[in-house]
Figure 1 (tube, rainbow, N blue to C red):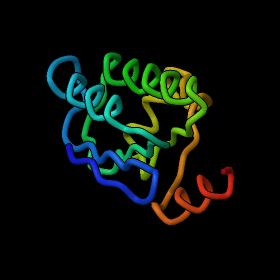
Figure 2 (figure 1 turned 60 degrees about the vertical axis):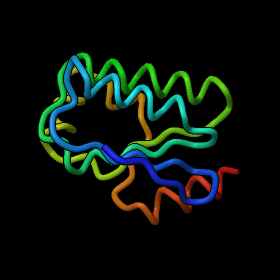
Figure 3 (figure 1 turned 135 degrees about the horizontal axis):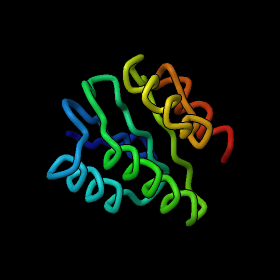
Length: 109
């Protein structure tokens, strides 16, 4: 997992399995360090379990609860399918490219 900034937007790139344990904890830590909007790139996530989905929801609520924006970037078909199956896909804003996400976040102010 890596984090980088584009202006006041933190982009967190997650890879591998996002499951109960260190991966979810590391993700929570990365989100807590973000000062502005958060964009989570899930392109390289091979599997996500209920703990991972729960952490995404909790992080989204924490970020948006402080007036910041939160979005998911390049979610692969497998992860997107699990999100649809569990009914949480409607909670998130999805983007297919980093450029479109950054433009949307900047437009929303």
